[in-house]
Image 1 (cartoon, each protein chain N blue to C red):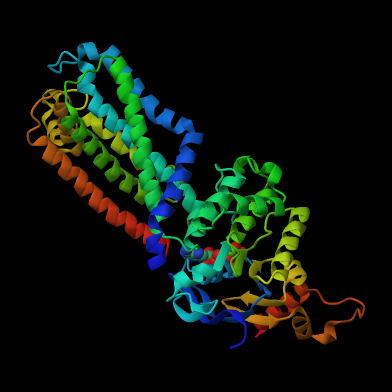
Image 2 (image 1 turned 90 degrees about the vertical axis):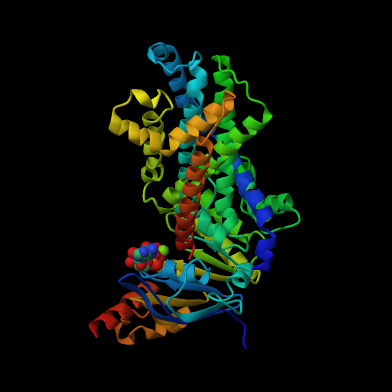
Length: 256
Length: 253
Ligand SMILES: Nc1ncnc2c1ncn2[C@@H]1O[C@H](COP(=O)(O)OP(=O)(O)OP(=O)(O)O)[C@@H](O)[C@H]1O
Ligand SMILES: [Mg+2]
């Protein structure tokens, strides 16, 4: 046990190196993760944008937070996919029969998810800049945005881990992400909620995406964030903790 | 204590209702090749998973290299390596990268050198820089076994190492296994091929319906064969015939 603990970070480094190689060798995963949100951004800004009344003059600014969440939601599906393949192909068993820190195997995937999603987020922000996105935010608000996005990624990554570890088929492994990708559409990510019918509006205003989007939007535009940031943090932390516990249980079950 | 590498006593395991192992006993001497023979679903993989600390038994004990698999899994893992039933290699990495990765996880001093040596030994030097996804089944299996040799573990578990290989690749794998044992490594392999056990193993155990129904050297097993049936004097009974005869006897009871 002691030796295994001592080696955790060295093992984690090897695991991270491994899955980062996977990502750099299949750049298409990052491209796929970026392309759909970017296409959506183009569509909403240049096709629907003129007809949408958001009360701001820069629709790209309004849209960007939701687009980033969609990108992360589709990005974690690849974490689930990679985890599923490792499980199916016996790679996890190979690692677990070796004298290494077992938890490094799972944490390697989690860390990889954080890194790869950070890359897609940066790419999308760059495209948004070209499309006219501007932010007056200083370093602190940007750090806060980074923190929220990382927390959101981490929360969804643990949800992805549950899916990847317990799925029976490849499709099953990534199916969990579809409803999450869809959530921003029933939120204030694209249009303000006050134009929605009551039932939809109540849902939209009380689901996690709205508070996260509102918090990020306020931070980026230098507005006061109010309550949204705490609600957003509570959602992210809550999901993170619950998903982490279930993922760990699924992992322990797989690895007796 | 004599030189026992693996000792299994009264091992039992169920998956929900399915009682797969109903009390398995066997011993493997250091430096031997031991073949666990059984048909599909006999529980070979289950035994291997318990011995390699991937699965916990319901009852019974198993010690590997002198350590109890249930209570001292970390010590067991120091001594063993596993080549699972399906090649567990990283498809997206190259052959060399796979080996270096395992060498790093075993904290070896010179991962590159270790990788180069094994690539050479397994005839994979030319394919070393290629992604494993481009490898043939035989090459993949060779790499899989090579990965298990990184760090020179004392005891190696091979779960159906030649299933799905063509005859040529199979003979190559056999050669590798024989060399391992010549070098003093203990090998436990499972197989459905009676010929494979016959070719390789110092001792053979037949796993059937949750128990070891027969075990011993090939010569000892051959003695179990009802001699009255040996009508053609010049033809030795093959393990297959012994196997069927033993199973037939059990089922007739
Ligand atoms: N995780 C599991 N859950 C439920 N049943 C299982 C599980 N793993 C194995 N079994 C069942 O236990 C029995 C023994 O399986 P095992 O894989 O040990 O057999 P095997 O001898 O290795 O077979 P094969 O030659 O097909 O590899 C089979 O009937 C199998 O269906
Ligand atoms: Mg099997």
